[in-house]
Image (cartoon, rainbow, N blue to C red; front, side, top):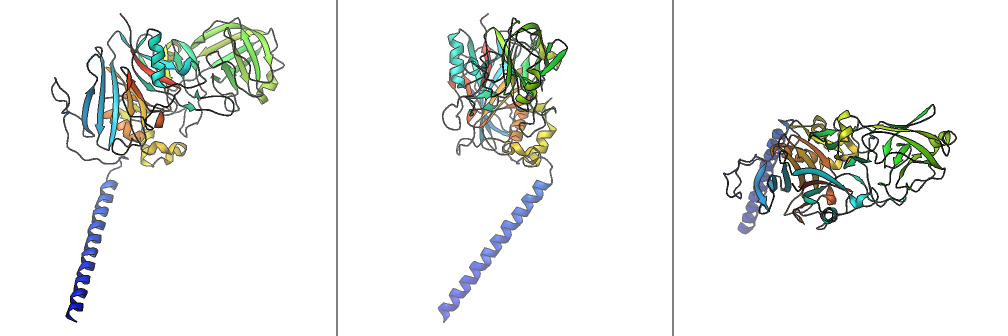
Length: 450
């Protein structure tokens, strides 16, 4: 009987201890909730002491922001003056790689490279830089750039959806659509980075403003080297797209005897040399193809005939983009003058609901980006989906991190398994699937021989 009472008393004590533990946990959770509600800042709070990098040698210790545990300088030996490569450890369990170029170094420049030298198809960052080296160019760093489709049933083995200007040639420009679930006409949506001949860095949503004139008729052109459909009913195709337009049932007109390449400020006379009502026309090296989706094309089929003459005009806006030599597009702006875009803050605060079709931006994934300030250009990759190494970042996390390292303006590039940073001969980060995924184009830092 005495033993039975002892067991009963012990059980009562265990129950009391469990109740106290549950009460303690409940109090802690309430305090955390109150703490989170006390601020309207839509990010996870990481509390660490401000620290200094312990791995930078030969210089005074650098004071880092609260969000950064440490910073390593990578591959400093053999790097040219004005180029640096860093690895950051973010307090939220992410590893970030950043290639930096000083803007006032004459023989360093921003550049772009199209995968396989055409729109159709994909290529790894390593493959693109290897091709450049064979041509005698000197790439120092490259990061995957634009968004696009990897393949479809029309024979497009990958193609970009964003702006691409290379060596002054207007290679690709889309119509501004609500493709991402954001609002493209806004300052936050579909954004591109470009450099003018005098070295000014631009970050804008860019519009084509193209048209052809034949007799008394004018036809607006919606896009260059993009998909022709009801959303983008009139598309201009150049040989940079591929061998043929890959359209179906579009009405198409081959234009020749015009000046090439197509540029951001363009005006040339042409002659129509072929008319094709079935689509998928071959694109001549010495001409272009105008494709019109079936409903609209049926009205133009009788107006444009073989041997018709006219003019082709293009004027990118904002106007400064008309002289841009190299440019690349992303899908939204992250920072403006060192401040996180208000729409991005709303997106984070709502958990992605304010841009519901791209709500994975509110989850942690590998990321890629480009940024700059008054002194430097930055190419950035965030590793992710790798427990023990790096879990990735949300778009808001990445924007605030870039702000913490001194970036003033930034755009988001394609991420996920595409995120890869090549520098000085190797991929320096750890892509999500432990190998490079072929991508659409590359944003580059390269060296010019003096």
